[in-house]
Image 1: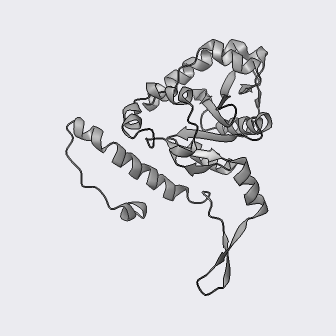
Image 2: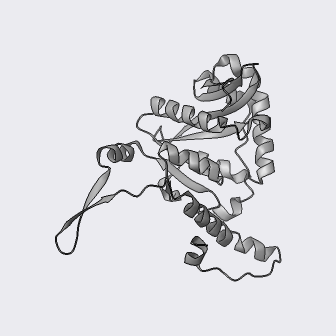
Image 3: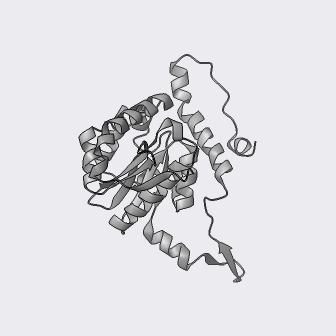
Amino acid sequence: MNNNISVRQATMADVHFAETIINEMAESAKARGTGIARRSPEYIIRKMEEGKAVIAISDSGEWVGFCYIESWEHEKFVANSGLIVSPPYRKSGVATEIKKKVFELSKKKYPNAKIFGLTTGLAVMKINSDLGYEPVTYSELTTDEEFWKGCTSCVNYEILKSKERKNCMCTAMLYDPVEAAKKHVEPIKEVVTADGEIEFHKRRRFEGNLKLFDRWVKFKQFVLLKGRRKKEGDNEQKKPNFFSFLFW
């Protein structure tokens, strides 16, 4: 990352960036073909005022990136939302630094909360994985209706609705502080075999399996978009064998 960029907790001195930030969020979502919960400048300013946002600023005072914290179900769940980087600074590593900073801020403010996210981007999945997130089912996320209302503006909302909110194009990832503590204390687990022997197995982690997981995500998207392709009049494609897809 550019050493001339400062990544820090946002303050009220940064409120003049609010309009620029929300406009860039909207443009980025439009370019990706996804939807986001549209936020107002006042909402972003309130996050800054509450100390629940992280901002990246260049040494010349230019806005570089932003992310904020939202809590759900009486602070049982926390999401790091609205991650956005100014176009000239993308692929510079600043997104990783922002995610790290907002993740640490979330743990500090909500030490007992589960931190989760929904994303279609492999780069974000990699960052989350490095921070300790694990892929999970949608059932392990918050049930707060206010959170799920944010999905209504997404172009894939009909898929989410048709799947009764159990699956969609996004991958759900979760950091559970209780499970994270166990991994530090118990890096391996004992398994008793049928013969009564004790074997030690390393806990399987998401790290290192990113390429495999990327293939799974693409397969999931293929299946979920199948109905849409039918509606659009596309020719029916033969469904690939799952295992052959994974090991292309």
